[in-house]
Image (cartoon, rainbow, N blue to C red; front, side, top):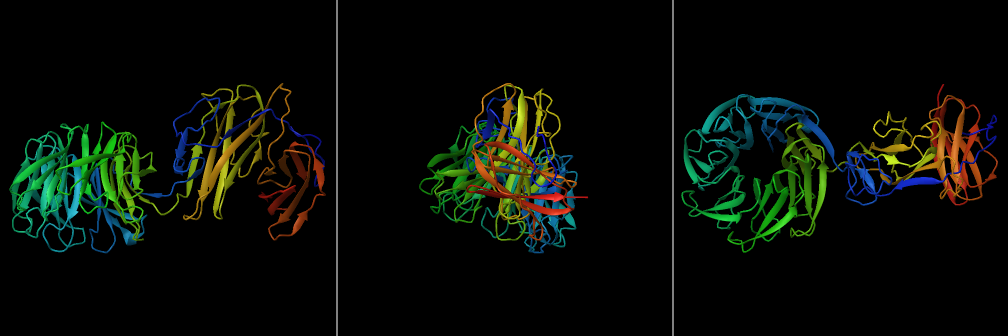
Length: 607
């Protein structure tokens, strides 16, 4: 579209007027809108590893880095962390696997956080649903417990040498029909670890007494044999009397319940229903959410899409006030609590199966009445379980997650993701545009960058391939075909410094509808930079000015030596392009000064 280009430095320029543009300055409406749309509004199509909903009007890299532990451990129903080999760092355990029959642990090799060694414990534990770790035999190393739905078993595996390389299987309870959950606690207060289980088909909440403390002899004690669809079990001192009580979630009965350990021996129990309308309750947990010194209760409900906590009003567990945390957590499957941000109060984590979400909610005021949602991964396919532990030993809490389709991963919440992207909705320009340029406003600290790709088509169902990467505001002639009315952009955010992120504030595409005579002015000063970049010698520089202005462009090489200094010249409002002569291969910087505006763009000349 540019004509009459003469050799060396600046030989001519051509004003491109435009009559329309589209700007997106907010993405808070969220993903999922492919379009076509006639206005981008505050929604978009797809995002990967970017944070679009915590700061309205800005896009940043997600403040977490995902590390895949085992992406092929499908049907991962449960995940847990413990130091299995006794080397001082935290290892990871999982239940499920490709055949759904596995209990496995992954060795954290020197806290490298990236290198893991897989160690199967059992591969014939039919429909393994839950895994936990505790020192069952009291020998000082960590053993492993599991619950399997189809073999009706609660099992513990003895860590023979304390290194996790040799295991002996011990049956705690059999004929525990539809075993879904396992946990360990000293229920009778005798100093050794007992075992608890929830049986979905058998409707049982049960504990087994570790008779001799070595885990070789067990006595079964049924707490509730009619807890319809028992799916989750946990233990905590709910009434503050010094002994351990038991909590349960009933999937079919829609209940969250706790049982009082009357005399501390686990032989007599009183039932208290915390909430009886929690549709398809899937998980129960306990923590002091409001910081008042007594234990509260948390729950996840699959059908209600709900993460909720109940306040223990007087500390006795007889009176509860419900506090919803998130009523739109699609397919809520698990809940857990930990101080994720290190501010001294307890936050909440969850996994949502239908939404594919691993999320934590920040307890803003420490009383559990104000929450801020942080989505760690919105595409963790079939998310089933969330847990927290300091995996890399840096003193900060990390998040572990397991998923039906995506296996087991962990996220470092103290680092920014190295790369993320966002794809816009497809915009219908409602005309036959003559493309002008793409521009954006952003903040890019050292080590960070923002770039774009674009594409346009006359058929929104077939948008074609993305353009080459545009590293600075760019003239679109030759990039997009004039006349293609549908356009879409992809923003790409990168950082080489995990402590820093670029920030995108807005993006604008300008065009001239063919045959339209309107001539509004460019509204801002822009330096588009070199075209092409890299080039093979001949380089053109594009820029835009909103009013009659003096413009000076200077070119420097990598050493800072001034290579080209165009004489200052006055230009009319619009988009201009200047042709530079042949440059020797190397790295160059182009600087534009006009009125109060200055900008510098980097470009490369190759052989």
